[in-house]
Length: 181
Image (cartoon, rainbow, N blue to C red; front, side, top):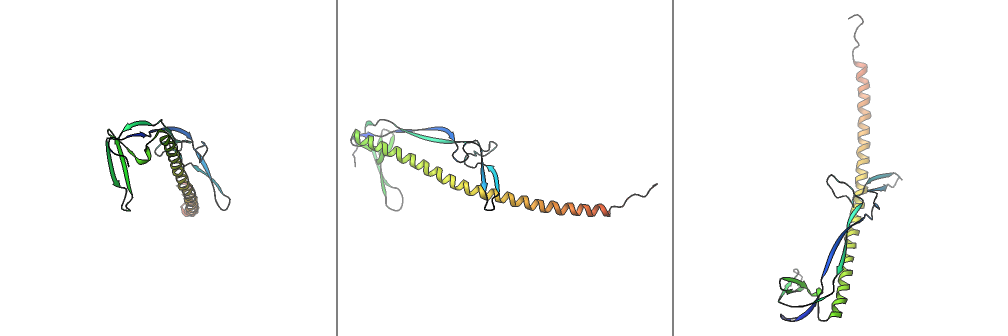
């Protein structure tokens, strides 16, 4: 652990967001759900659906992390705490008013460059895992939504048939006006 007044190499990065083609619908805004009986249903892509009036866009926000060259800075404060009740502790080093965790501080420039590479890998991997989890959730929703709407359509068709038959019966019961009146 470093002390206040120590000079250390600090790893900084920035995140750049860019719109990329949706990996679920490949930019088409629609996906096809195939049921066990072979029925194909095309539905709006849920991964690139921003909600509201816009609907599916065919694009999602992609993140790119750019790790900058480490900078030599002097520690002006330290905070030691516990992440949760499991007893796992963490250390935050402060450089003026900016805090950085242990994973973003190194004793030498070379060590900082290595840690920066690992940090970039970790951040990218976390984003990929998040996207995979979102895709899994959306895939479940596609099947459920398509099935729900097919069942609702079948129910409405059944009701429409019933009401058409009742209307035909009512036509037969309507009195016809007599001639000359």
